[in-house]
Figure (cartoon, helix red, strand yellow):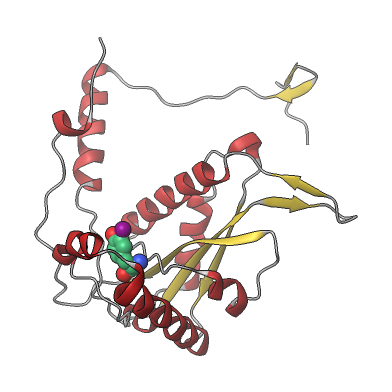
Length: 230
Ligand code: IYR
């Protein structure tokens, strides 16, 4: 049903938008507490196999899909996998690519940079985590008569959606890690995705193992990663 308060702008319906706003003091408190909460997020490699309800994953994916996107094309598909055979197949294929990468595709410098993170070619979390979310980017849309329409700012749009996905996972009290097997073509095949979808990121989702360990690394300070022009 059409909103009674809708107005036409450029010939298209627009509706009033309302957002709660706050005093300066409240802004400072809210922005600080959000930062402190987000700062607790870590990329975790030690997963528990404890089940996570499907509804939680659905809510997390719905949160990610609220991301802005070029011309509102929403150029993403989130594939959520709990099926054990598929997870095993994904682990097997990912480890084949990772072995090749760690043994010959990655430079010595790159492997040295990764050493503090404790990554290697073995990816047990791909079978242990109760869910894998594979994010596909849609390079173009196909209409009902087979015409192709390119999407806009696809990498930016899907990157933002992944950031929101990761925040939603943290909000649920679950952990993830951004796994980037390269090349990722095997995911298109295993998950039987159409030709306009390209794998973008693979995220295992679940509870952290108890105990779980993360590398003792620090984030850049504000003055190291920002510049203000006042
Ligand atoms: N894709 C490999 C290697 C890797 C690359 C980067 I850059 C990382 O920050 C972490 C790992 C992997 O997923 O292990």
